[in-house]
Length: 455
Image (cartoon, rainbow, N blue to C red; front, side, top):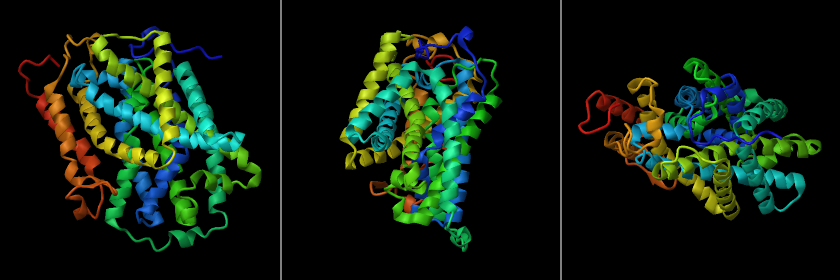
């Protein structure tokens, strides 16, 4: 039985740091090689792109979105603290609660949607009722999160091997008997749907930003930024690009037989003799990222609450309690929202991206360009310390970073900014959400702020 992780939101001491950056490749490859990634890839064809350009959008979107994602990962070894604790240096100990609340909602939504898919696969394996299977799947996820960091990385390696075997087999089955030459011929480029598909695939990577450093904070401080970046980038981009390309081709070849029936279609590709093994593969494929959602979710909840209690660590019992509360909430949301509500909630998560990209920009600029990787760890837990309770400068930039995206935003059927139609409905808000706050925050940090704590 693996040892239960004792650390929570506190800094990891040097004596407990271990491992190599290459372990991050398997973890993030496994987190991306799963059924939800394939569904996202299918959307690139659904928006109207020719399959050739859909595949191009998948590759380019993941390549672009993976850059800030992997840059966040490189923060973990340098500081040894959870990602959202480090945000207190930019926003203040209390000010960081604003993005934290949104991150918690993101975790809950992704955990709930992943638990529904994993529970459905578990139900197919065991013939148990779907709702009971969802609860069991959530419980197993919580157990893995309680055991913690070591188990998560070990499972990530095993899941990566399984993912390669399964997706190689499924990819061969997918293209067998189809004329790919005919499917990929006559490619016509259409800019608006290409930009929309690009935003969908890049957004997939950007949503990992708030918790990617949680999985690298146990690495030795001597681990280079370059190594952490490239091992994380390689795993997340390769895993997502492969799974999304599979989904794009599956939708292009099978159409409605795939969209809306993803698990059944994937299982059906293997033939009757492999139904159970493929259902197991689907359940395990979702498991890695689901555990990461619980793991990062409980730490975000704890970071939010401890900002006001000034606690710098949780007891083992307290840590388990946070994990269980988060898992119960997510499981309840999954059971109650298996129908339209859950789809609407996942749609709401797209709105959260508009709030997370400015946070990502501010966080990365502060780490790499303003403070040059140097932070006072004790002050991250003290509202009276050098980072203060609130940082008006960062909060104003953050607010402006959200507002500047509104004219370009396009959440289908819910909200369309007044400039989005000029781009054919393409959503480029995420680009502005990254670039504008990054430039503005860097410029403001070049000037002293009266009454503000020293950088």
